[in-house]
Length: 501
Image (cartoon, rainbow, N blue to C red; front, side, top):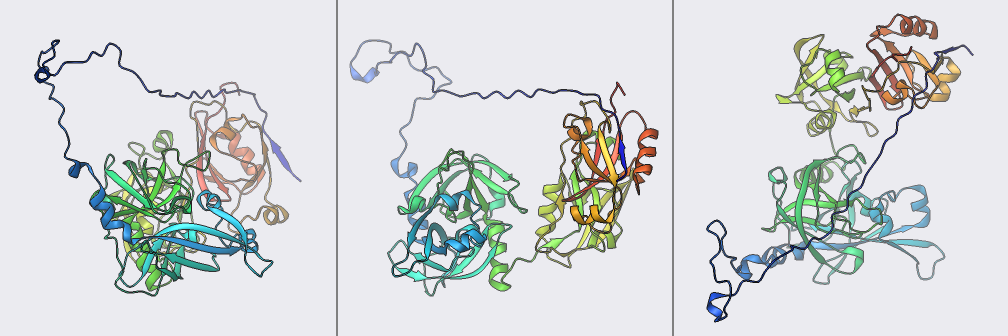
């Protein structure tokens, strides 16, 4: 096995994290003020001119009871049953912490098969029995039962599930059911008051209140994420329940919590109603969700990558790789292009671009604005249909431009047939394989990992370790631009040489 090794200069970095706890405070020196109409002597001075006296709120205006009364009849309890073998096989989507913590284990009567019973929530959205819930609530279930707040019980059929959005649609055989009207979630703003309605811990319907903490939140759990973040308490069993505004209109489906204990810690997430509405329509019509597909491997721009590719500012998406014969390649996009616009809207980052693409239908003719070698171009791309296992990959690799070093301590080997087979490297990928590298090297800090394939150095293709060696030694001193393939696709890395080397 042929190897090429670059000497290493060691460096060390210490990251310090500090947590701050905000404690309740007491206002010191506060003195009671006597009511002038009470007959008591004391400080009877009126309040300053810029301070209004406190007003007693009308109890009817302060109550959310009208909104709850409007929504509650359409928020149902969903009970699912899976065998232990289903869960072991992963058919039940048990990776979700909400579902894990809402299950109890009971044997069915007259059977030795252990069954896992799950309790979640759902929202009736049509009078003839279509119900929105989470994919992780019903995915892989052997039996699904729905209980309405009025006590009626129905056996439900799973119409379709969509793991990428974590949404599902189930159907019960009933008519003239209460429903929750859908609002446009794109109008939701940070600070809006919201109500979360569901069945936490299977104990019965409950309502909690809070505000919208953030919008368009991505967590990296699934491909299509633009969660509404809320501080209204939600707990296991709330999955699939309703997030509504104060008028009683549906703005989201509760789906996840950020928690170290499995219980509420004030950070919850809901799928926006705009997303839920489209997913529901596709699941009912097709049984699956049809999404647009661009066929690129993308990464977000850093200020230094923006400078390298002649981009003003650091907004846009760098094309690190193209899916062979995919829509982008067929339309003329090239590796190294920076996508700055999609269908007339500015592209800020890879996540936003992915959402914009997947919200369009296959065969949609999209205008893609790019900057190539400093020049602006517009291309017309006919979107394909996203395959089950892939969307436009977002390769937002960490890189620290302040960390010195180059490819020091990197061990490269030839991309032989056995290596290609062992690492499952696609046939179209060519280059030198990273066998090993020092953990504190600049290349490691920039995102290079063992098993990666260096496809190009300074925009020159790499076919062997000898070519890599020559390009490394002839590279400029201020930085080294690599194109790298890893298990997620191709992307660019910018590595800085060491001042000691």
